[in-house]
Image 1: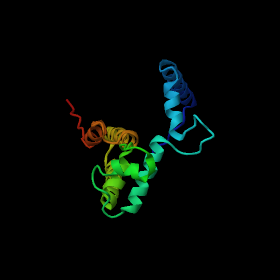
Image 2: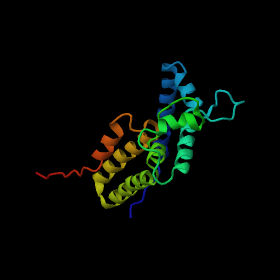
Image 3: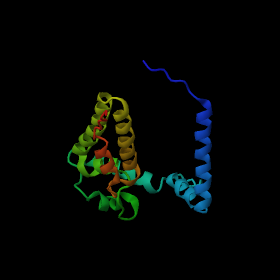
Length: 171
């Protein structure tokens, strides 16, 4: 079994770089990135306790899923239903996971579980560098689906590429 020793110096440098990147991106965007992420839970105005934006859309998607558990509402239909459920305007999903549940119901849930289960099974089957490649690429694809759904093709493409097995040739 492999044993790992935490290198606190390395952790410190990584944390320092991340803090520096945050500070740089905040200054570069003139504070707009701070407002973007603060508005996720409506922290801009602490008197209001409502969720706004992505979190509210996700909550409405889960309500739609609860009301249409078996078959969902159909591809693309949740977009208009979010207005009916109280969002105030017709809006697209921001999370592929809740969109799949709302629009495809139980079959969407089965699809999402199969993505996660297949990733874990394949990760356990792989060895060495292939395990790292699968882990990084599938994690990138899955985490990207949390905030951008499939409006961009990149998450699905990268997730698919994660299943490529590389073989090194010895000369």
